[in-house]
Image (cartoon, rainbow, N blue to C red; front, side):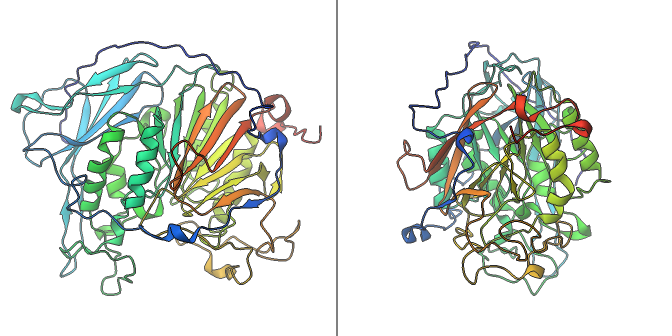
Length: 527
């Protein structure tokens, strides 16, 4: 990665209005939406709709939504990301590669990265100048207007706006948070993002697998290589302009709504010198330093009364790792009287009943699940599996009213189509030795020793931990109502925007599940 360059953001920040929103009243009875208090639920599988196989086709580079629409050194691919707390955000954008003296309206950094392949016939890539500028001293739940660019050469963006997060507190929450993963840049992606926009979220969380640049050849053609084996080169190729296409397509949403991203396997992107994740780490702004992390792979932030922990599955996570020690410190510093809700996000799911990626992340689960459970994480969001699945509350494969609800939303619309086979169906249980991922710590999955699947690697029916599953592209909306009730809705792409495929109130029970310290914690789940 090239050395950092000077940067600036010319930002017109205008205070519009400060809103104080009271939590909505919750009535579990009468609204016909179940809550986790009604669980655990009998497993439900919605039959796969064969008509949904189509349209998993990427947008071409000629589509007007992905072509470059700015001139000269004007900013493009503009996005907003949160810092650790409400009083600060990051503005990111990309410009041409010529350097000019820049004045500093807000302190930031600029960088250029390269994706290098030292093999004949492969084309290297150098990005435009990527700028990240942090705005500080912002007021909570306030609309700000901004422009970015270099006024000294007349290269300025249009005026955009964003709303800051509410101040942290037990009665203060974003109105809607959109959550999805494995997005890509297909016609299904466009449907997903269209539906997301119609829900008017205050925050977007992308749980990994961004643009799938590694499904394209790097020989100058940018040819779709979904089925290639890459046998002619020792490095799996990527076509980096797909990142630029994605940034242009997403700008209309994420220049106005903050986006927080965690890495997925399609962001590994190996290149010369053993470098990985360079595009991911360069293109997004992360509140790593603000949250005490030294990595773009794991960090945390507050969104009102919610504390989000973003974790990396593709770097070390064992008890001696820097990530694990950071997570211990971060969780220990969470004040549940200020941020009652604790939400964790990483890419590959621990609890997954689909054949795709079945029990692939057992090593991470073995290392981290006890810590996640002991601090009372309420919800876990994952992607990786290209389908939707919501769990009952679970810990160590056992139904537990104090365990998190695990939700897989890897159905954003990517090129690889949907996961439709389940590991509990005849002939679909994978051979155990094939389930490990080389980037996730080796093989840790073994036959179950207790429960209905004891002695087997897979269940012979939908597992008890799996409350609801359906193969369909879509996205989810999280609406935290107060310190104990949150409404989760999953929207199918093929349905009208007003329809949802799954919805449930997720209810915290701190008086039942939380104690003062993990090492002395007593679980009273039998009350």
